[in-house]
Length: 348
Image (cartoon, rainbow, N blue to C red):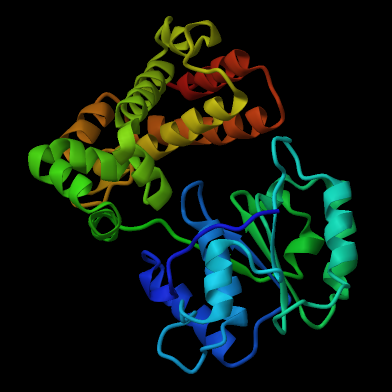
């Protein structure tokens, strides 16, 4: 259980203006629910948003313009990760969040707050709770103490049991637009961001595209991860086109032995990249002005899409959906990709 620093108030949290305004209004009216699911992609700022939410709930300066105020004792303690009534729960180095951890949360929830009027639990990667853990959590979620609030950060909400989802409203963090991302990077990374933007506009635009609208991802790329991410994205396009076209050596590019796929999560990310590339390929087929979510350059997207019909792309999209589900079920990685390729070529 640990704390994490956050931006001082909702106004300084990048993007998601309507969501921030709605959450602030709910808190000011005293209408906050006992649990929320905070959804968003990896790097979207879910944990930071949860800490902002927690600080806002116990902020001692609610009469001020900003929420949380970022200046009162409660806000400063949350920022430093030392407030006794804001408790972060994570899985540590384990792959799942188990029942023993959730039983500890459940027992602790019935101990009165130490300083604030509320006691807030931030459960990180809540979708990785085991079914037993989720059922244990339901026991406190169904009849929580009046002062308890549970904030569940989550990248895959459908992994949560329907009974959990039904008791916790969802707050979805959407990806930043290109303009919002540029503003965020220039504000957060200052001179480093400006140097890249001014010296290499192509790399700057590729970084923004490669971030997928996720602020955390963008900062990682700016700190030196762009070349690796570029390699991953190029691999996704190469593999996608190879599978659709029936290239005999397409699967060689994902051979675990050459280091491109070292974990199942790498394979799932590769499929997500392929799906985003495919979405752009379909967009440029249908509309010259359609916004892109994967390619930084429209000409590159058009070149990738040129050999294929709309039917080819639609068939490939269905195959990628099935491929992702099969990887989620622990299918053999290379075999799953091979089967997806066969489905993509069917009917060509």
